[in-house]
Length: 384
Image (cartoon, rainbow, N blue to C red):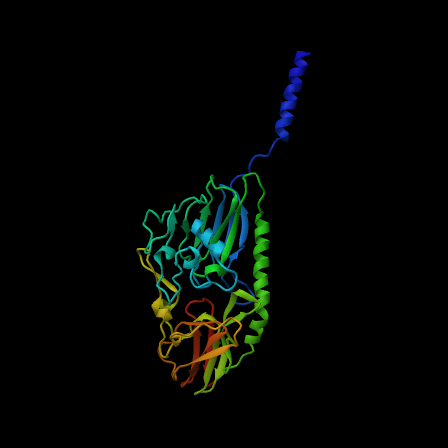
């Protein structure tokens, strides 16, 4: 009997272990894209895809930026969580300072680039410095959820950033934000216990595809309408009131024909330039020095051959978002097709937006581009 009981006890022990809690899954890596692309038309989105996901302690979130021209950051930390909790709903705020996160936006060209935003910075506590973080503070760390500031720095074309979650991170919600695009570009990471389920890679791909499709569908009617424009009413950028975080950085129609002495007038929507004969080093919003210092590419933003955008009137109050649209015309002198011509940086959103008029005085075929948005190109044919 004793031997039989011993065998029974051993069998029960094996069964119990087989039916016990499953071992925690191995660490996983989840892919998030920063910005988006579409085969439908040139697309730029100030969003993360997906903007919400789950992960476990020990997992890694791999952020990959797409080269849509506008720089972004991936920024976590207790400062970010506190600021996000206070940001009111509505359009992106111009500064995060009132909400507890130091103003590190550095939006060109109105503000100088903050090096604490532009370069990597990882702080256990306290606010970021006014200048760049030290070399020691620029060394990546596992994210424990308790650090005050965990910042990728500006992510430039095809640049990635991997965030490793520390084994000690507690379950909860952790916000991440782009420092350039304020409260309009937010993400939410939910950390769950090691034994809990997250989403599969296929789940993430579907979420990304669905979120991109929503933007494309919202913009498509506006893109179709812009492509029917004329020389008197062309478009530099296309937006829609149906989607606030997306634009089609296109020139529409892509090809325009005018006689010698004729003009093209573009309605500008978004942050763009209209540049002819621009050298290669004029392309790109930012420049990076060998020591890591990041600066606005002044060549791209400065007007050449025209007046550039007028400064806002001193003391003028901003118009409310529901105000009737107002156009500020910018008129350039005639251009003979020789040398650089650049409208300069035109930041243009309703209810007040810029139009840009250029007269062509010599026959020829003139390709042009926006200097901060790749694939935003057009052609003006004169006298053909």
